Length: 230
Image (cartoon, rainbow, N blue to C red; front, side, top):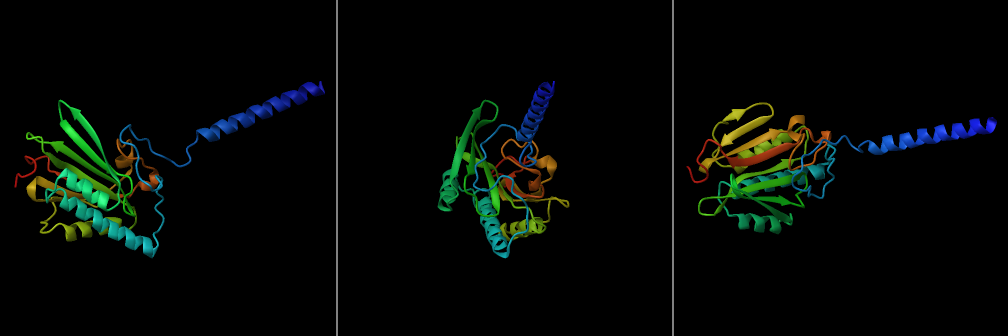
């Protein structure tokens, strides 16, 4: 009788240990948010990106990267440089760009450009190029993200104002978003990302630690006729 009780105790203990093992195995390491299928995550930074305070050296590098990437947006949208010039510039900066092509009857041909090695403090560079009626590609959208910090939104807004000449009063402005009109049918905007922005993103992987990241973007104004309209 004692032997049967001992065997039963061992079996129960084993089942409990097995249950704990599978429970812990199923739990995510970080509180990751779901991402819809899309482009592969392609950057050398830790995807969890904890928003701990930056050291002075990290802060300086991040500000330099912010300036660098904001200038990329200006040069390759409003200044109308071609797709191969964007690829060459990103390669020269050692960002390891790559292209993903898509084509369907409704939207036509599209090329997406991403990078594998973003400058420190930035990530998720994303450019979308479409072919016009002459089969020439133009930038429809170009953006990158800047690491979250208490000063990040203010720094990004200041950098846009310094980089894009002659900005008028914003078309739209709130605590977490600001947008200006640009020449050639484009707009430039800065947005502080919230939970809704980073949930089920089709291109980027996020965790809750990424709330507060700043996205800087230039894209065609949907109300314009496309590039060259001004």
